[in-house]
Amino acid sequence: MSNIRPPLFLKPHIDCTLPETAMVMAAGLGKRMRPLTATRPKPLIDVAGKSLLDRALDGVAAAGIGHAVVNAHYFADQIEAAVKARKSPAAIEVSDERALLLETGGGIVNALPLIRGDAFYTINADNMWIDGPVDTLRLLAQRWNPATMDALLLLVPLARAHGYEGRGDFHMDGLGTLTPRRGLKMAPFVYSGVQIIARHLFDGEPVEPFTMWRAWNKALAKGRMAGISHPGLWFHVGTPASIGETEALLGEI
Image (cartoon, rainbow, N blue to C red):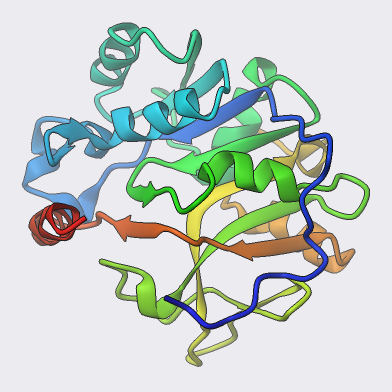
């Protein structure tokens, strides 16, 4: 377990209100997962008997969030069928990106008409988390403070980022303040693919391909971006080899 202290200023709110919507990012091409993605989208690949998409949506439902949006581009018909077959969350809508793959930021702009509330979750479908002592999505909601934040990221210590092969994404101090990794240096925290983000960061943005960094840079410039360290387990499932590695680790739990 990490010995890094939790952010001091991100104390639980007495009145914790969950965001109404969770958007699951499921539109990518999954190139690193080939040949498994030759006939199906990456979010529908099974890990330990359950698809990555179902695992993400199960987490949404378990947290008590009743509305989800799933974007779809590659094998979009299969994503739609998988969503239709589910009974929870109570309402799941598909944001259609068949015409153009819009990346993370553009995908959110395209989905905004479906998203409810001033802030919402985003969840990358190629990452898996196991809750710590508290439900992960509820933990984020407990720490979310719209008076001081426009984005709150769930981060994983690099040493515990199973399946991740990069150099890390962020530095985080004891107050939860984030600094992006620069150049070829290492950073001690990895973005888990789970966050709460404010809707207004996407105001005026066009429906075009762009990454989440366009929104994050707005929040960073105003000192309104924060992070918390995930107390549970996390897995990045990016390649065929990582499936077996993840399943072996899950078998040890």
